[in-house]
Image (cartoon, rainbow, N blue to C red; front, side):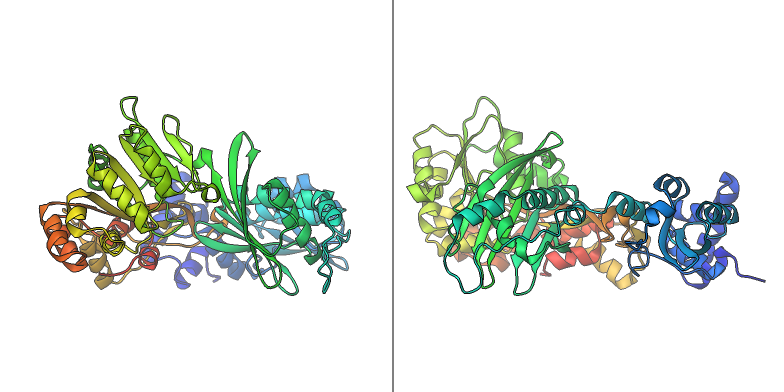
Length: 576
């Protein structure tokens, strides 16, 4: 007796006996297929079902991972099997070999469909099995031409050679040729395609770099870099020149770094791009930071703060004077959090002024100034000017030097609330950094109101996340370190793992959220700063005694809530 699909899934360890029985019961009650019920209940995913069916029917499994789910080019398969038929029946032509047509389908036992394909094409049919989701995406790529970049490179102009603006060993620069390359139809189309695809994939950064024999294009999505289809090497100089023209940079300068920016409009969304160009050994490297104004939520309730952390931050931000520092590395979301804070406290009764480099989020009702170091407009000089502008709240984009730190301190001591950022590993390290910059401990103890730090963790894709088997000892550690007042039983907590599906580009994650540590200074902590300076151990012990918690505890709370994984939190935090 042949094994059933349910038996195969149990034997292969995909389902437990309890899950199998429950799925069979639901399938019977709702009159749907067993595979549908198992997927809807979250016990398995489409790929597991397809692999099991492959074993059941002895049919090869085709997927994007094993490189089989891809239609061969140059065989006129789109004419042999029309797009309308393929979409209606969830079937993709793979290749033709003599009188046999290989097709991928989600139901290899559908004899009626196989007979229809045979009648339509006049060919014998060899079935491969895949999932509906993957087949739909493969149909889009085959009949519509794939990604935006792929379609642009495959267009009729892609074969046209683009001459290098500077030939090997030739230091003379033909500016007419450079400008012509930058304005060429193929280069313009390719740059537009790169930008469009990066926006579609929610990329935060685009990297374009040249090596000896190739060009590399990478998109940073949810904090991780992924390679994308590169253009021919001959197009590199044209692409860089095009981006320089858009950013109003000097196309003739190839020896020095340059920074610029420009904006594009896509589907009524304004996207700002910050462009950084750096000369490397094989050519200039371009990095573009994308800021989608419409995707940034300046809501203090939605950035990822726990209720107590949010209340402490709002209380500190509403104080009439003092210092407030947000710390973390570049790209950790500090600007978004500070924007949400200012958006929360702004009102017609107070004057808020900011000095930033650059101004990324333009907020109505707040006076924002852009640093221009070339003409002497620095953080310190702007801050001195602000003190004559009758401010109530001052935001300084970053404290980088002693002059800026001392000016911030004087402003805080003379009746202003000063909010700023520092690049430190954790929140309390800002005390050490400021003292190293020359700030007297007794003055810092009197003025510092709150120190916070943040990191970004990737959120699990809601479409494919799956319960994970976590050792009880690890579960106990997570619950213990989360420092939850009414802690749940570790054995009852459901932990999840990232699996990957088409909706999350097979990464298992979709979007990011911040985790925080927020330390509101109390009397004991001020006494430690005054007496011991930057003694981080004493400060952290006093904070823990007051019920405050670390960034890892904040991350583990999100793990317990099913938002992310233990591995993701541990990768961006350090243990005490």
